[in-house]
Structure formats: C-alpha cells, structure tokens
Image (tube, rainbow, N blue to C red; front, side, top):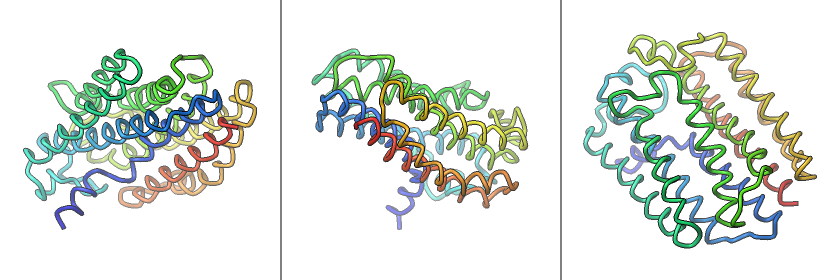
Length: 287
C-alpha cells in the first residue's frame, strides 16, 4: 500500500513529459547516424528523475502552504496526510540526487558543461513551488516546462549522442515543449478554483477558465503546425501528424467544459497524446 501511494504521488500521468523529449532527441541522433544507447538511457534516467523529483517537490511545497487542501486532482501525499512533509521532501531530494548522479556520469562521457545545465534544471524544479517566491505561483510554470522539458531535454539528448547543437534540434524541440505545456495547462485548468482561493496565480488563474480552454486548443494546433514544418530538416518528420487522432479525446473533454475530477481523464489522455507524438515524430525524424 505504501509503495502504491508513492507511485501515485509521483503522478504517473505526467511522466510522458519526461519520455517524449528523449525519444525525439534520440530520433535526431539516429538520423545523424550517431545513436548511442548508453547516453540515451542515461538521458532518459535524468529526465524521469527530474520529473518525479519536481512532482514530489510540488507535493511537498503546496502541501505545507495549504494549497492542496481541497484539490480535486490526483492524490497529494502531504495535503492528504498520507505521508509526512519531511518524507516527501526527502523523496524529492532523493530523485534530484539520482538525476545529479546520472547527469554526472553523462557529463563524464560527453561534456562537463552538462553539469551547469543539470544544476539549472534541478534548481528550476525545486523553485517551481518551493522557496520564498515560487515562480509557479506567479504564472511562469508554462515557460519553465517549455524550456526544460522541451528545448533543453531534446537538444541535450541529441547533443550527448551527436556531440553538437544545430538549429534543426531546436526546431523539433518546439512541438515537444508545447506538448508538455499542454499537460500543465490541463492540470492548472482543473485547479483554478482551489488555486484562486489559495492565492496561487497560475497562468490559468490569471486568464480565466474559458481562455485557458482555448489556450489548450491553440497549443495543440500550434504543436502540430511545428511538426508539419519540421519536414524542411527531416523529410519524414510529418509522420508525427499521425498523433492528431490522439488529441481529439482530450480536446473534446476540455472544450465541452468539463471541470474538477472530470478533467483528470483529460490529463491522462494528454499524456497519451504526448506518447503518440513521441512514437510517430521520433520515427519520422529518424527516417
């Protein structure tokens, strides 16, 4: 039962955000005939560890602030009293340390500049809802997600295998970053009522319920437009458009006005859309 709680607290529905950039970055490496499985696996380990660490950190920080007391989303370990704040904080630090260890190994195999990038990613993960002025409470969460689970993760994964950075990597990183932002937008849309009451001014709180729903729609459209535009560097990259059918179910739920717990399924379906994008887009790039 305890293990099940920790797994639930890691928020599995958000983990595609860690898998997709590594898959796409590896697709770039395969295209360049520079696929390195060890480096790719290490990059995946770093990405997953950072995502889980950030989730536990968010659980801890929101829990001790009282933000999660009446939240309708997935289980919150601290707010629900299922785990002590100290244990959740230690879990967050444990996964940050794991990300750091894997990152050091990766840096030793490639470039020590990765230590600086990794340190910035860990700091950003903690300060999202932690610290005296968490930027997630001021509407900047989407920017963090786009940068670190889009640009940095895709370009970094490609770099550790290819050994260089090119414009094409940044281009294919854009739709990946947007897909991760979609996940956060759904999460924050669901939490508007509780965030509003607790003073957490996410982007969704700032622009309101209706605008957030249309923001999600616009992001999905923009994501696939960038996928289509990637053909200029990778001829078969538009295979990523095969993920479009996976975007329909969450769009229907969101645009029809679902609220509260009814949006939890939209979160899972958005994750499924991300995984479909990872499969088709990365294969198309690799070809």
